[in-house]
Image (cartoon, rainbow, N blue to C red; front, top):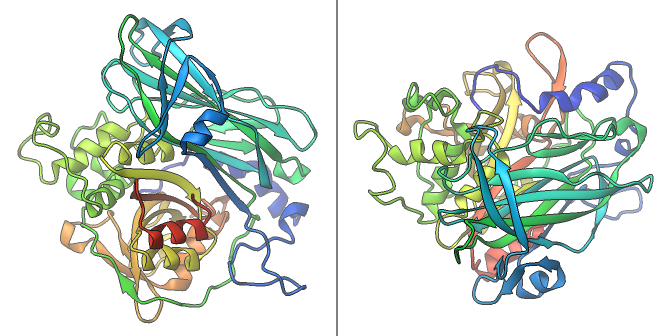
Length: 457
């Protein structure tokens, strides 16, 4: 989202709990949790992470699911694709009004039992969708009261925008939980209701009568139960290192392609994504960039905005769509998860893995930023000798000005908290440590170990 004080679609997640906070009530499940890795509880044991990311990525994983017309494929990047289609269906694109017939096939994951019953869940995926194909991801879970959720659509996605318009789906709720763009959320966490398990269903579509197919290499979801908090415990500095990540400003794209969320002022997410994609060697060809006005600097940022754009949300800040875009580049993976502390970020940076973090704050809460925001993405690329955060902040007037150093304590708090006061004094939500992680399809042993340490496999 942009650095401006515009309302976030995720702000509504805080409404029920905000009333409880204002009245002094704290959900029971939140009172004993901490999310700082390395701290211990009264027994001297490190508490369980309040975050559970699970993904299906191996040939064995894909063989364990329930397939209807889908086949598992082996190789360096195992995945699933359409074998013999299970049937045909019509889809009317809500953003174009066009109705078309598609062949489809489905893969449904085994049930995943969450290690931490969750108040929120976010799915993400990595796939190749050639022209004439697209995919849909759904989630169905079981609540702690024993009842089931509906099958919720978590996204309809294609790498391009010619066949369908990639979209989230509004208006999904069963009175206990709701889908807010890309996030499943329990409606009233204060009741103690939680999501205890889930399955994901993947539907692959193609033009009838062809042998085209999407290929999906990674499908997963992050469930979490982050305690409601305005402040978080401080972590101790443990690393001084900086990664050489390219620097791109969203601000120099103001007014460009306003059909994609009013131009660059709101392009923090795709700008951050493009920085890390290029850090890993991802490059766009002149042919891919040929649609961009040749007078525009950094045309790859315009491209990233177009191909992360969510036509329902009307913005480029759909978290899974950004991760999926990153994975369209050869030999890259992308996931959406939460991290528990700056210690987690240090673990990743030490292994050469930068991260994109999501945060919101008042101008006075982040020294040196010079702005306030209801939702903003930036790229963490390292830490100073004092432990302060080195970030490539796209909300900068030029590419040269993108590198910033933010005070560790301030950054940690605005990123990890789940509650904050906005400029009018109203209680609104924070992201609770949400981040995108992009990394090689074949991570090195050191990278694999770092990812496993933060719950990503």
